[in-house]
Every structure is written in C-alpha cells, then in structure tokens.
Amino acid sequence: MILYRLRCAKGHEFESWFKDSKTYERQEKKSLIGCAVCGASKVERAPMAPRLGKSGKKVEVETPVAAPAAPTTPSPEQQQMAALARHMPKELREALLKVRAEVEKNCEHVGTKFAEEARKIHYGESDKRGIYGETSEEEAAALAEEGIEFGRLPWIPRGN
Ligand SMILES: [Zn+2]
Image (cartoon, rainbow, N blue to C red; front, side, top):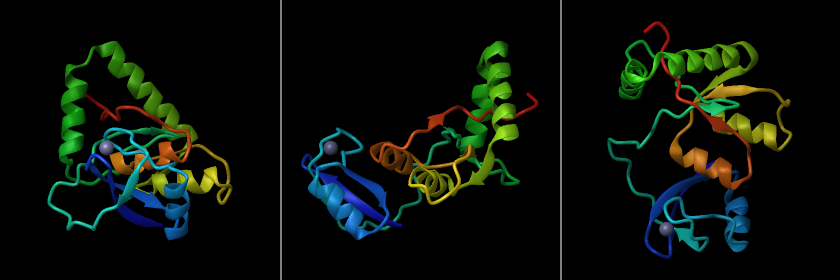
C-alpha cells in the first residue's frame, strides 16, 4: 500500500491510499480518482508535504464498522464522543450502544487496520466476514472510491 498526496485541477490537496503505483496510474488514467473536496476526477500527484501536528483524523465508525482503538488515556476524539453521548437523547444513546454491542459480538475488531482489511475482504484476499475498526477520512474516501461498502456510526463510550 502506498499513500499518495493528490491535487485536483482546482488545487485541492488530499491523500489517498493505493495498492501500488500501477493501481494509481490505472485509476488516474480512467479518471476514477475523485477529489476528496470537490469530486473533480482530474487529479495529479502533488509533492508529499511533511505531516503537521494535526492529522485531521476523526472518530468515524465503520460497518463493517470502524471504532477507535482503546488507548488508556482518552483521545480528543473519544472525549468528543463522550461529550456527544452526554448530550444526546437517552433513547439514541441506548440505540447506539446496542448497535455497538451487536457489532462487538458479531464482528472482528481490526483496529487501525480497518481500511487494509476491508480492502482485502473486498478483493477476496481475506475471508468474507464482518469487521470493525477505525479509519481516517482519507482512507474512508479511498474505500468509497474503490466501491468498498462500509458504514459509519458514532462510537460512543459505554457507561454514561
Ligand atoms: Zn477539488
């Protein structure tokens, strides 16, 4: 897997994962890569910029479902989810927790490898099964572009 930084004709820059450089070239030639910002299919490779502090990562849960891994100290995203959970109606919170429990019971947790595993399953390199884990906006956009099905749900913490 390689990560390319891409730029559309309007100058939006975004990152996308590709299986290899050939896959990128093929998708680029067929205009299969859409700009993550405006959807324009004319993109080119932009020079890799050094990573700044902010990763732009959001807690987005995917079904087969992505959920944040559980570090010992809550990440800003998890704190945000906790705050969200505190302010949502009780019924909604309970419904989300129910979904979470179902997912945990029936799906395999793949953590941050979600995008990688979802691809493997999609391309038949891994057994077809339900998985959940976490992924970034960029990876989610790349998966969607490749026609890989997944869903997202807010992964709210239990017990509040
Ligand atoms: Zn654009």
